[in-house]
Amino acid sequence: MELDSGLSFPSTEYLNTVLYTQALQASPPRSVVLDCHHVNTVDYTVVKDLRELHRQFKLRGVGLIFSGLQYSVLEVLLAADLPDLRHTASVEAALTILSGNAQ
Image (cartoon, rainbow, N blue to C red; front, side, top):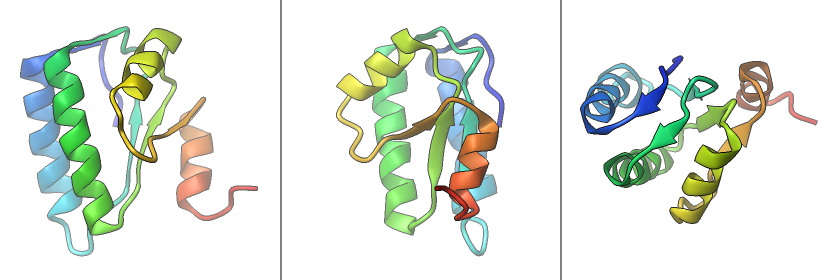
């Protein structure tokens, strides 16, 4: 899933709805790669929502990988105490990890 420029409360609410219905409630639950190369800002509400989303993916044993994070956004997410946050430089690298072909 490719995200646009900034993540703020309204867009995060939509993102959560889509990910819950399309990935977490699917049978079986699906892993997700969030293509964040356009995302240049995140706010507090986004971090809080991403923390909960990350927790839900872990509980279900499915992958959530952020790809293409700009350094400033990555710093915010790393400081947000998201245990085992997975991020890659590209969508292709994330897909390789999810397919089990990571070296």
